[in-house]
Amino acid sequence: MSQTVYLNGTFLPLDQATIPVLDRGFIFGDGVYEVIPVYSGQPFRLDEHLQRLQQSLQAVRIRNPLLLEQWHEITLSIVKANAELTDQSLYLHITRGVAPRDQAFPPAELAPTVLVMSLPLETPAKSLVAQGVEAISALDIRWDRCHIKAISLLANVLLKQQAVDAGVAETIMFREGMLTEGTSSNIFAVEQGVLLAPPKDQHMLPGITYDVVLELAATNGIEVSIGPVSEARIRTADELWMTSSTKEVLAIISLDNQPIGTGQPGPLFKRMYTLYQNFKNTVMRQQVPHG
Ligand code: PDD
Image (cartoon, rainbow, N blue to C red; front, side):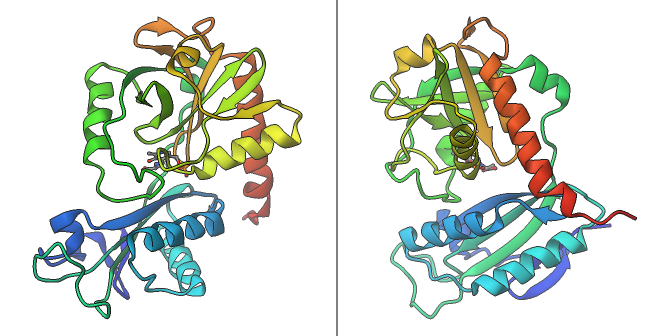
């Protein structure tokens, strides 16, 4: 049976959800999106994701077609409609709407296109967490507005495929010799017990998981240094991690075939992974009634 999605005010099966070819998302990649993890039927950090969505919409000057309460209702309805999936990855997608092909904005009253759907959330298996993953590096060839969660992801797609072609999990990007992020993740490094994080600027997506990791570091006495991190420091770091809503926290054990640190997930990673799982289980799982 086809899963239920929300499209422009209607709940319907995915295989019946269609958009006109003149949708500006299809024609120009003119839109923004969010990916929200759902654990035991509850969206994780929903308000923070909706706030980032609002910021992305504002940055590209698309009006938010729904009120916060409506976003809550729709996302929760989609989670319930797909309840056979305990853990889900909620996908919210808004485009500037359907209009004759012209790069200039259509009239302001045009209704944006809104899609909400849910996919199975497959967090990394325990074995992968224990083993860590490999990565390659590449120049960050993306635009100068990477803080916007834009649906136009062609550069990310090409860079991610480089990782797939190399048989590794992620491509870590550098701009002018400085770390930016992964193609679909934020990157942290560890140097002599200190957690290094690049600053939230226009060169990276301000990750919700990035915030959780920094909060957990702060509440657990882990020393953090937020600031530009050079490529040289990434290559000689004791540990590297990637974080995202779907991958949570994963250790990167090699970069361009060279081991990072000991070439195994490091002690601070193991600590953060446990802190993250405990935090997630405390705020999410325990609220779910049994039976
Ligand atoms: N991607 N940087 C980029 C470029 C991303 O696409 C993502 C997430 C992140 C991590 O952000 P968060 O912790 O809020 O998930 C960083 C999602 C998962 C995606 O596009 O599928």
